[in-house]
Image (cartoon, rainbow over all chains, first blue to last red):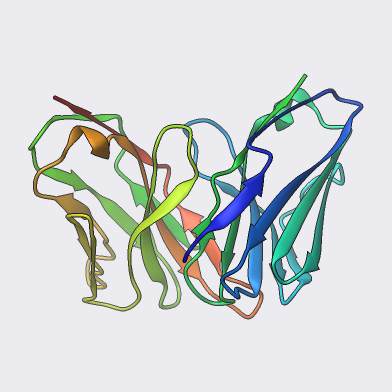
Length: 111
Length: 114
């Protein structure tokens, strides 16, 4: 089973809202990732968690706040977003140095 | 730094045509190479991979061979179907104990007409 699940599938939020994206995997992977993807572009890495510790932060604005409650779950907390943050947010997981498997994504629209 | 260059799209083919999508890379170490596919409205799916020179990855009729001498990983399929219409991303992985970092090409949009 190589399934990564993400909720919600779609999210519309105002610039003053606080919301969270959720990601889950049950493959025993110890690395989890958040990516942002704009239309017709490749995914851009945002954060990497390795063994539940934040190991890479690609200079992402503080209005995006990741959290890894345990080895199976990854959250992305959103606050005071801008319209340009509208995108597809993808979660992925892997063994620490191995193939990354992606979830279906959350389509975020910021009004 | 490490990078991936793939042919620009969109590529439009008729059903049963032969497909080649070129991908070349620059890397200082010994990367693993991947092709991911993204169907409309979906996330990325791993299509195939190769982890060392001369390895051939294959899946669903698609193939790609890791060529270290030409730093290439071209994707091929002998006979495309309408259902193959998607965006294809070539990527390399620079692994470390911090987690593997994927470097993507720009993506190639494929449209297959009946």
